[in-house]
Picture (cartoon, each protein chain N blue to C red):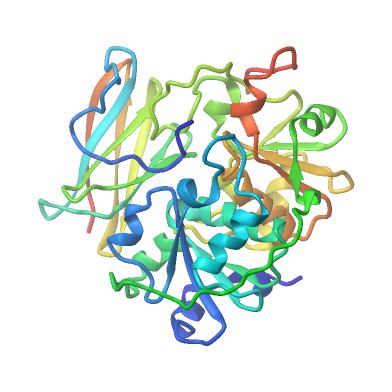
Length: 277
Length: 101
């Protein structure tokens, strides 16, 4: 798989806004961002409203995903280009969903909204409606998704990559520094996890670093390429960004995203926890 | 569960935030004295490592919840970039202004 198969540049995107069979999808945690201006023709997916189960802590099931994509006018054969704010965190999370549910042609817009805005490319507030489709999703591909027992079993056996900031990893902070620090669960990390903050995989403008830089980054941190890997963060979206770098860009095999992440692991009773850098 | 998303930025602290406990870095992005909305404001720790990022409000405001220490606040905007340093000795509201251009 080459970089071009999974990532498009802002220049490519701008040239392909009208291309038939290419659907731009903005995915944000802050749903109001789309309404203040979006890439012309892009449809909106709200991380919380559209991608999470309304009751349980889990994400939308297969039928829910089919319903969402059908309503947004996305067909099975469309090439979906995902982008969003916050350095594509939630766009990467959505990308992982699309892969989990078996969508073939899905790509990330390199740099997301940030690069697009820094480049001064067009945004508009036109309402976008696409004719409804009948989308058919596959069963979840759990080879991409780690559950809590796998995270525990990975201790000492697999690469565990904790992509949170160093202060969250060491136990100094419970959440990223732009959020209130109110979480109740214990602080720290899974024993033996490598701390490679997601941000190290990205340039300042939100684009991904080159494959050579990425490989050097993870090797230097101690990632053993001969082993399987599980990436995690706090709620699973920053680790989707790293999962994308490891699995989609570097092409490492058997890389899973642990979407339960620290908010689940750090609340489990009786599991080992490590603190400090 | 709160998201990792960007909360609304502004000068008033959200309800439930105790500036006696939290280290709050608060400030404004300006260009030639005028507020800059929609700037990407990045918080870097004492070693220059990225810690968090928010988008400045329509009034140019931003806020971070940090820990005691030395921080760099760097703003990116299509009209230019800029940065400022701030040292937070402990909990409380710490003001920092960033000019871009």
